[in-house]
Length: 217
Image (cartoon, rainbow, N blue to C red):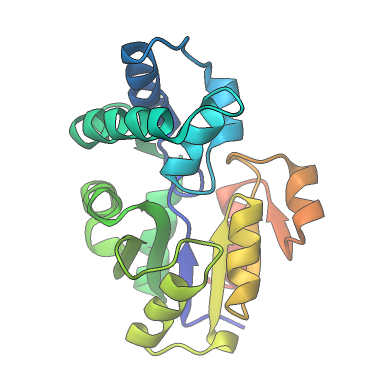
């Protein structure tokens, strides 16, 4: 059955943001006397919010004051450089256009700070996305389903009318906490095995497969 609403995760699902995140993180790490990380290492840090990313990038048992300092440096740099290398994954914009053409509403829910999430969504997708929710005061981070449920409420879509698309175990938990099925993409931050172990309802390997899962023409 064709859904009324599809909710997407942002980073690693519809946008490839990893290089800009890594550049900002390495900039702050360098300012604080730490060695830089590789893109491969960065994939293991993301998925649970930006503060957790900074924490994972630092040695175990690093003092909270140091983590906070690295995180603050990352935020400042990233806010000014969040859209340098970031690009939509190939085929995503065309897919969103076809969803819109068939009257399927779309939303994005992210653990990225809301101003950044909205800025990237507007820059790359414009009117192809109906609503974006990010991290802000009073809004629980994923896997808390608050942001997902807010989009469903605002658009007027029930659990049976909504699908969730993500790229991580956190997304699977978020979807299930909201009473939704989760389609996971294979091109994001987690391996197929990790997605399977997390309980993904379906894993897709191409944008064409993802589109087919929406039952659109």
